[in-house]
Image (cartoon, rainbow, N blue to C red; front, side):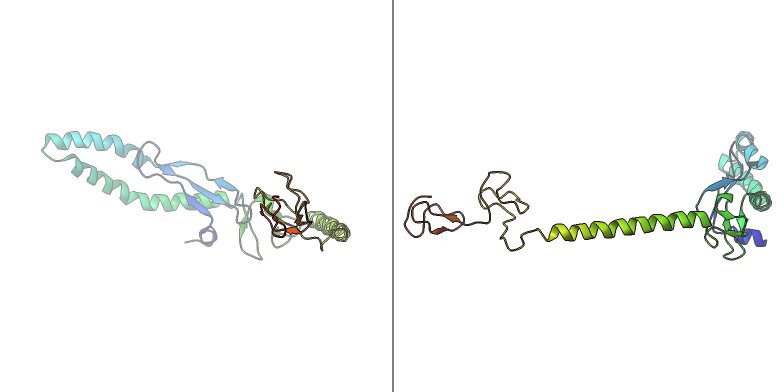
Length: 220
């Protein structure tokens, strides 16, 4: 196994087909950084392409001799399979040679990256040597976001100073069970919240949901 093959051991996909009209060799390589892919040129495998119609022809001939079609299929598969391995290895080496022209190997992290992820001026991938202009723009945006966030936080502190934190709040209306979100009146039924209800006759405090005043018995 060549050194290039070792480098591409984790970032390629085998697209080869051994039998049928589409029999051939093709490999898809990917950039370690952005995962964009590049496919090698398709290399047909003649042995696999002719296997189909030879199997039919041999099956007919063997059938006439009283032999089963499966025996013919097994025989042809053995012949095709015997040549498949060496042919595939050769095709892979050719594909790697092509891939070397589309990827750059970073001498620092030893990964293969595409042209878009390569810092040509430094001779390193963009992970090891990020583009200066891009880093400046990103840092400027982070600074803008941080400063804007801090100003918003300060503004929120000013608004918080005006919130009445001593006023009791009912988050659920005792009349209709709707959520109130701390409002003074229920947005669903209009019931007055937080301040306890008072008896219209004796002004005694009425418990939530009371139908009669517990002090004077007046109907609510």
